[in-house]
Picture 1 (cartoon, rainbow, N blue to C red):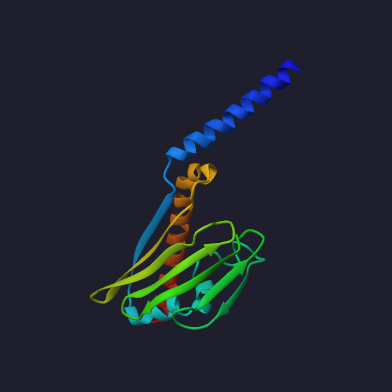
Picture 2 (cartoon, one colour):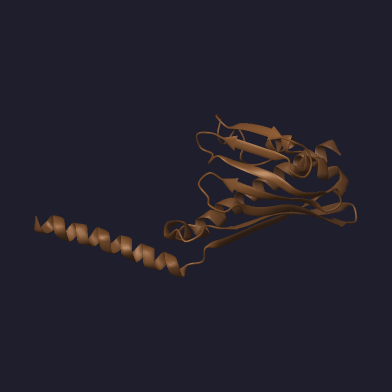
Length: 176
C-alpha cells in the first residue's frame, strides 16, 4: 500500500509540474515558408483561391489519409473547405480575403482547437517568378500540454507547408 501511495504522489507531482511549466511557455504559434514559382501571380492565384483545387497540392491529401473527405461551399471570400478522416483532425478553412495579385487570407478552425488560426498565401512578384509565402498563426490557449507540444507542432506544420508549396510549384509550372 505504501508503494501505491508513493507512485500516486509521483504521478500527481508530475502532472502538477507539467501544468506549472506549461503556464510559463508561449501559447501562440507562427509558421511561415516561402518558395519561388516560375509564374506570374495570376497563374498561381486560381490554385489558392479556388478551394476545390487545394487537395491537388496541399500536403493533407488522400496519400496521408486515404479516408479523408472534403466538402466545399461557395466561391471567393467566404468560401469554405471542410474535411475529416481517420488521421486528419476535422476542420474548416474559410477564405477571408482574396486578391489575384496578392494572394489569399483565411481562418482555420480545427475541431480540437478553441480559437481559429489565421493564415495566408501571399504573392510577391519578382520579374518572371513569384515568391509565394504560406503562413499560419494561432493560439492554443491555456492548455499546458498543447503549450509543451508547441515546437513539435510548428516543426511538423513547417514541413507540411514545404511539401505543399513544392506540390503547388509543380502544378503551376507544369501547367503554365
